[in-house]
Length: 396
Image (tube, rainbow, N blue to C red; front, top):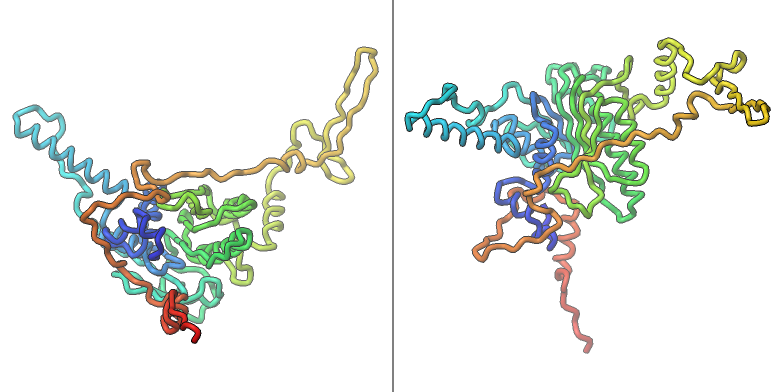
């Protein structure tokens, strides 16, 4: 959690310290869950690029401790309020049509058989019930480490890169150190996302979910279309706690459905790789061949051409209008656009606004300071040289 002037003016920065979160990014995951109900039926999760651990902290408090936030907490409050009103009505002697039953989720309800694995290059301070791995998600050796953490009984020498006990949800909140060159940053972020996707393909079960950070750019639609190959639904979500001035967004992929015959392989880190064309041709060959309306197949080339259209003018002259088009060309301009969803209640804080603090406000320290930040050495050298505003000796 940073300490720049912008962070200090940010309501979510202060709210995270007040509520005990390690970073303000915890609200992003909570607001995504409000919209997509990510944690429903989830017991096994992999959190990639997890440092400093705010998303893993959310998973620990929701899945292991059984706490409720966001929409679930609001539903619990509404149920508790209705329960109180029904009790008041029953004590006043009024008729109550239905028997009074206590709310089902007022008390924390921990889930059984929960396993959460967090991975990052930076060390992560311990969290209750979280297995932490210090590894590089872009390196092929990380996949066996992850599989062994998910299933300790697995044979470490096994060459199969498939989880024996797949997970329900894979999260990735990782981002590269931005350079300010937007095209370069977007490209590096997309490669980081593909590395996360490669891990997800190895451990995600059919019907699972995948959530990752993206940088929206000019050609990001291609990335959405590639993810659509593996998931039934793909959404682009912008939580309210994410600054509107940032190109950051989150890709939410629901219902993992790999193509028939697909198997994740480390030799093809992006999944299908060059085999995609062969798989599509094989799938097309298995389907019955039907002539598209208005097309006629050439016996020699096999291409689908438009029927010759007879056009008769007022003088009775007939012209033949023949267009040499293939079946793929009429649909080449058709684009699939991923739905864009804004997450978070409109009554929530605006991450780009500055709010006036009360007079009795007390500044709190971060819940978990960075354990080994990459800028630690630079700070030590700066302090050794007298700090930022070091004194310059006057020339005699």
